[in-house]
Image (cartoon, rainbow, N blue to C red; front, side, top):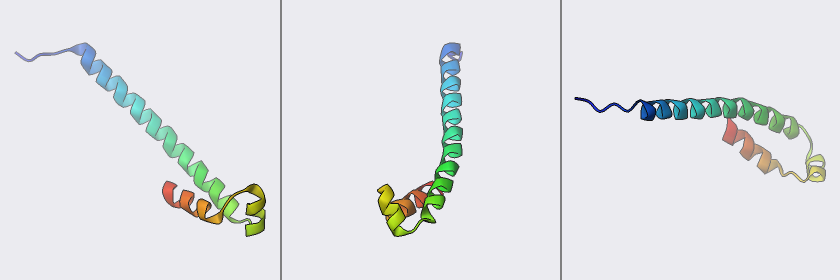
Length: 66
């Protein structure tokens, strides 16, 4: 017959649910990150420099999370 271990199947399911939940949270966070980066991208270079941010860093973040 087939070997069936209900504890193993439950742990796989629990792990899958936790990973899926984490992915959904990251997706929600990534849209917030893109919005924030787009807002910062509206500043001129001197304003960004005062904040210690390079425009290339903003572009990289936007590309990474889109």
